[in-house]
Length: 251
Image 1 (spheres, rainbow, N blue to C red):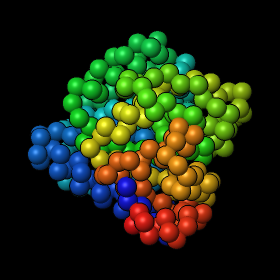
Image 2: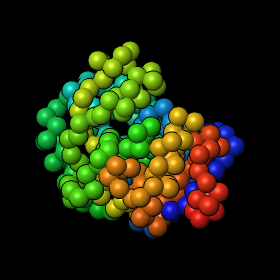
Image 3: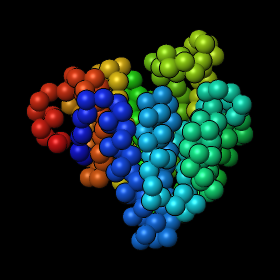
Image 4: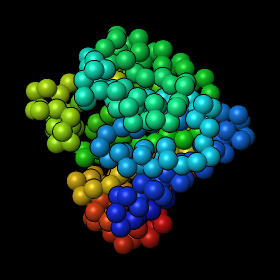
């Protein structure tokens, strides 16, 4: 794992987008297509915008998979990650082959069908973030580090649900669904490369826990330290609690 720290989230997003574009273009050049996993949430806004502005990506040769989605939420809801991806990535970029997790359908069936599709070939790059509670995708602590399934139904803890209110997706905690469909930890780290975008001061405690504490289901994103081709992009605020030893070790 490599850590890269930038003065602002704009600079962070630009640097992450440059690396992401290079990975996608290289996969297309070598294989004729690229398979990616896309993250959502407020922390990804600038990164996604920067990525679709990059030249040299033939988005019609990109197959996109969805990281997570709330159970029971229609695509019309402002917090729907299907809606987020369609409006912010799929339509602006012109992606034609994509697999969205239908939160309004039977969740077990969605997990099974999408899991079969994603396991059909390797993922070239997965884009992820780190939650305020340290979650990776919607794998809240203690995360399941053992399942070999690609997608599972998970229960969302209150800190995770409170984050969604804080980001403005829901008016109050009662509105936030209690379950979600999530890509599993093992499936995420099966990706050939991982780009983790985690800006903002509100992520600083989670970032420190996942970088400096033990690799443990209690700190789900700590699993990224086991993946040789993971780059974690931080701004000075999200990196503010890291020790100089950690910054040196993972630079």
